[in-house]
Image (cartoon, rainbow, N blue to C red; front, side, top):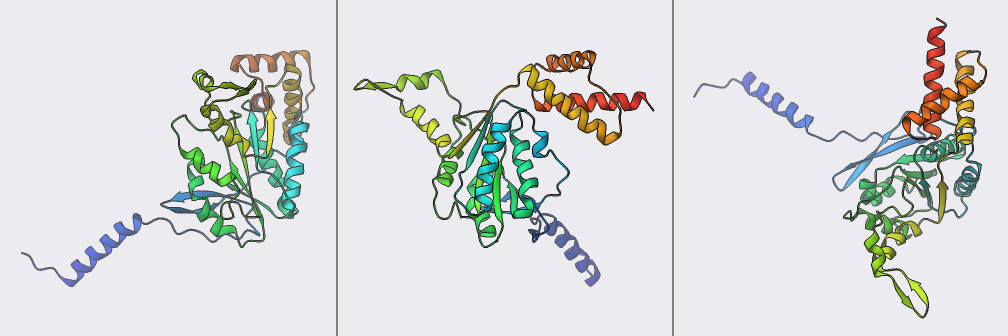
Length: 296
């Protein structure tokens, strides 16, 4: 067996430590919430850590056109929460691309100076809520826990964890934490025709079966439901005009609304089989970009 010099041994030790350190979890950063307005929960083992997010200029409340009722409901609830008054966890449900997520992020921009902070969390990480609470419970800020696109499959037991979270236990729902979730489903779980077979009539009253009761029970735990509906053509065109005006102003582009531009916007939506705010924003970006390019 060849002799191993001290230098060879130390080199092997260094290589081993390098490989070991690469497999270690990242060191969680210490967040200065006075400077950081949003973070994302990163699940890890039985707990996790908060990753600071750099916010870019997003949609403001004035950019959400035609959803005044939804804005008023959620802004009032958020103001109650920020000011230390009773407020409800909120479920924003309905058609895709209609401004659910944008509304939550716009609320952060509106209330950040008053102490509101946003924490994004994936539905699979809701089981780590006690660990998250331990990190923020002593903070003076008001934290909005945001779970985007929340939905569960029929065999997904994670929804039971969420039910526990929303039940209002002391550990799960501290005074400085509120949950806002978005979903395309009102009841968060897929509903099947067979679920109705368990319904029964008792003294002339219809009693839903256990399967339906279980699925309704989860969404019932959100105190505030805010519904979003597919856009009419007029609503869609209003949003198109708004975004064209915003983007044209940003780039110093002279433009005017015309019948031809309206038909182009309608064809854009028809090609995608959908009329919503996201579609209107994408059309405006495409049209303004082409106009700028043609004038170079």
